[in-house]
Amino acid sequence: MKKAVHFGAGNIGRGFIGLLLDQSDYQTTFIDVNNQVIEEINRQKSYHVYLAGEEKQKLTVSHITGISSVEEPDAVTEAIVQADVVTTAVGPTILPIIAKAIAKGLQEREKQNNEALNIIACENMVGGSSMLKEHIYQSIEVEEVETFEKLYGFPDAAVDRIVPNQTNENLLDVMVEPYYEWVVERKSIVGEVPPISGITYVDDLAPYIERKLFTVNTGHAIPAYVGTYLGYETIVEAMKDPVIDEIIHGALSESGEALIQAYGFNRETHQEYVDKIIQRFQNPYISDDVKRVARGPLRKLGANDRLVKPALMYIEYTGKPPVYLAKTIAAALLFNNQEDAEAIELQKKITDISYQQAFVEVSGCDVDSVLTKLVMDQLSLLQNKK
Image (cartoon, rainbow, N blue to C red):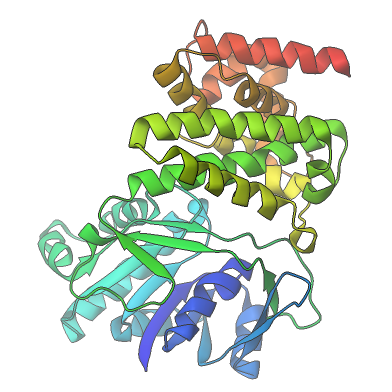
């Protein structure tokens, strides 16, 4: 069997990437800091993935082992030496942390195994593999760069599968939605294309990354932030509210128009994609907590993320105000969750320097920009309705 090394044994790692690797006949080694999960992987040697729906289809993942990155760093190195592909699903903030371990593995691999290897970061971000590569290169010597360029590929990827927060009787079992998308940029691959069923290889990833980010992530942010503002606890509950229904259709129409103008997506096909995304959020079998989906507002209000960038693109391409996206941004500025460090930091900024200055600082927009003024107008409307 081919060998895969996967960093991140959480629900997404097991329920999405790990499942597809198993279905592609890979022996998968999960690497994680959670010793309890690693111990269970090595004890059970398999787990089940359930597809959320009336039938709750059960799939079995086997041919797995686990390594604790904290307790067994040498084993991590050796696993990378022997791997046919390396993948990650750890979250954007953890990529710099695992980069050192991957760098060490690649350095040792170059000594023992002079074969090409591709490292694919399957993260909810733009340019995850490129970011991981940058951090890995910070851990190697200048004279090693040329060899790394020849041997190791870091193709960027766009991934999409809803894996709700959950607690299962078996620690390893996980429930995911039936729909998924895993798109990988072909041009950055070194050597043979990894034969993983479920991956769509494309020449230009940018349109697919932004289509996903500005439809799925933008769409999910609406019941999360507006739902929190309206007092809902779950995404499915929020999606039943006609106010949120109007906002999500309006916002995805705005982001959709920006995508169509920027990348030439077929209008009919894109609308079908939007409709499918909205239906996914309405699936009662994968409902998630609104506050969990809304967490990390500082990142999500960033210049290149799911709310600000499509709003700016809409203004650029149409010259019209993105009213529904601005309303969602305003709701995000009101997001207050004492269990989320970013939400706490955002509210402290607002208290210290005002809503407007906090938005300008976090988003990178000018204080007198069209979007800043529009967001402040929508914020006033929301505050006056309370």
